[in-house]
Length: 553
Image 1 (cartoon, rainbow, N blue to C red):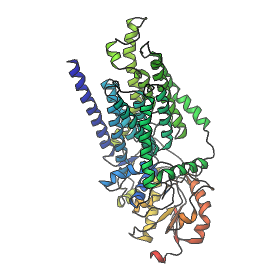
Image 2 (spheres, rainbow, N blue to C red; image 1 turned 135 degrees about the vertical axis):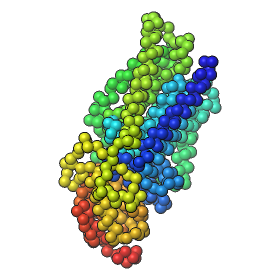
Image 3 (spheres, helix red, strand yellow; image 1 turned 60 degrees about the vertical axis):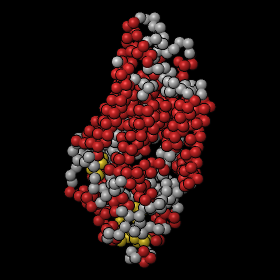
């Protein structure tokens, strides 16, 4: 009867967790794609999709510091539904389902059924949630979703590396190594920072928990990784272009060391690190295998540290998505979870049965607590997007005539912002109002035409998404002065502006320093080849002087 009960849990719990994930995705997107802040960021992946629809590839036809897989995943929902704001949410769901499925396949049989279900739901939520990491649950945004995707994939990789198959064979070792290689290839083609962290964990695993089969496991991972990347390179040339772009991005940034961020994050992460250390030291181990005791401890600490190292290189938010995985590995690494149930292979406890009882009761509570803190926040965010009030401003009615009719701005009256710059916006409503101005101005010149190319001297380019226009070849996915370009390293003016019909110059925009920098770089070409044809409170529109060839005069 015990075996039947365990078998039932192994079926019911993952099905329940998966159902919860799907219901949360549906509820959070039922009214549209919700944003509380940084709504302009949604145009980055969506314009990437438009580039792909026009046969333009990342790194070759437009510049981007994130990998090609990010845009191809965003493209997938448009195969069954028109491009819209929800496209970004469905893309999150695709990655969430993949992360959940891989985690469930890895965790069941290596962890207790309840913890396998929790861990699977956790990795799915990491990819699905629109909560800004490290922020309160009301901070709803889809800003830089490639980071959440990569965290989820890195978490799955860490689990597979740290928890070998309990009945490992040559076949399972090769399969697991191949899966790790596939996950590393995905990380490389989404964001290379996470790939480097994954490779570091792989190397450490080969000399610790995977040390009995390092060659077979490592070779399988390396072969799959090389085959996938080589196939993409041979068929498209994107891998070498991506690496060249990474070198340029590194050269653009004024400083490589972020000591202040590293120190602040270390302080923020310290309590979580202490939990990992205590779990690792308190976990029951087999006394006859000293290295079996040390290996999972080292790997658990490395998983936690990788979360800190990656955070330094990205948005320095005080939240480590690898903490729950590190805590889990600290307790269960190097042994079977049956050890907790039978007690036959645990270290003899000289302190008596009370300490044994505390160990078996307290550790699951600590682990589940580490998981629940971010999970409750992410579920709360998804619930908030399903039920929270949205702004119904007549000045945003123009969105209904565009593919972005399902974009919604959350109403958070208790959170007020005031820009410190007269050229910036106080909130996303002002930003969308300015885009409405631009749409009206541009439509007065191009009517309903779609064979027009428009370049704004701004953070990103919303016009192809809003009006179905041609994407700009040789542009950057987003322009961030000192991060993705500078006065020395930037797209060539002749290439960038050569096929442009109109140029928009804003008087106000997010990251207005970017507009100033772009104007300084391209002003000579703008004055020589374009002339102003329209102006509003927020925009000045320039048209190409020689427009007869495109019948745009």
